[in-house]
Image 1: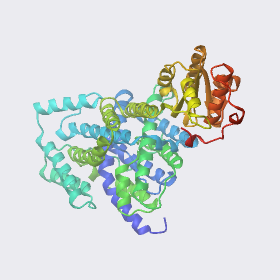
Image 2: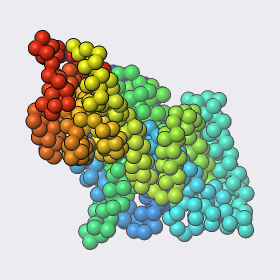
Image 3: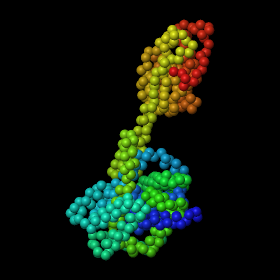
Image 4: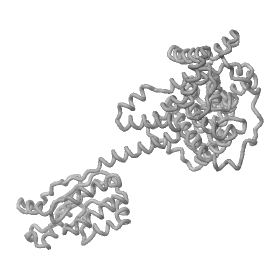
Length: 553
């Protein structure tokens, strides 16, 4: 923090200017009011900056969290949201202690992109009532609320609110392309507030009175009897906070050189922030990608920038609450509409859609689920579908191919006789539940021969299902009078085969061999004993030289 404090202080000031309208807007959208958004930005922003795992992360209320909170407010009221935030904070601390942060890397990119696209759509739709200047209709389903707001606006349009929202959003979007470093959001909000006050426009409804300061910390909202019913919403909030915070910290790392966040410490910091924020009337918080990106782009190098951002917002709460209370709601709606539009990375979406059909399907499914259901269900659906498609792709890599017998020291006539009675198969890739039954079907249809040799050196992995299927194959072929011999079983696969009894069956009468040439020689000996082939001459009965699986067949 002492390395370049001037640069960090300037970055913190810039982020605070950008964060002010967002904190107000997300507080209003959550249903707890603008003061809740400001309290969250101050308290959670400061604690996450000190105790979090990223030097550049900026935390506070976010649009994604707002999407989750709206139905909680509708069902349990403001006190339910505060209790959920407290419980979610405790869960995040528990995740940090369990060192669960590393698992973020397993979330596929199409799920993240679809999740972000769905959030952007929901945030935009949530602003429709304020942008149209109509009272927010009852309900927590964003599509239903939006449609009701459009119907109300059609009956009694408020063109002043529409103009304010459209003008603020337009200034932000155009200004970002013209001068990306200029905080057009605060400039547009100030201009809209001045115009509304000077012109005395009735259609520009203001935020309303804000308290001049933070309330004293209190646990009066906590109802122990409601903890059981709030457990599921708390899990959803904790999951979203972990996902968004770690994603935001990863984005910050990618925008810089030499910065690397600690995922477990980040979860711990976010947990403390979410435990403290409800005590001051704040909503649950996460790492904010938009504000973190502004922080990085303006040159922040340490936690001092995020702390400065929280301190400046605290000064605004204590010194400028009367001025902030006059900001038109439609202007804040315009800020959030522009923010939602800027969240959509068209280039990334196009790349994902062109990558593979599976990626495109996961992206669209996650986005639609986010819009129609909720964020946690959307992520779960995306992960389940992504996992199923990944298993399908891996299962397709499993191959069962018949390979020619190695000639070894056999004559042409003897080799032809061996090939008449022996067939060799090489198993490539994973032998697990998703591919095992196809393997069983192919192998049990083998032609009528006396010996089957299974070359297993290229089996990459095997699970209990694969081992059971292999055992079933051996038993079925043995019942048909076909001896099964194996070669190249890896040490790491023996435990699985042994646990289901397959290894003992494969070792029946010494039919397991280290190499394929040894297996062929063993098959030759078996055929001799069965009277199918004549014994080798004495000079030809020497053992076949060992060769590696890569050079045989």
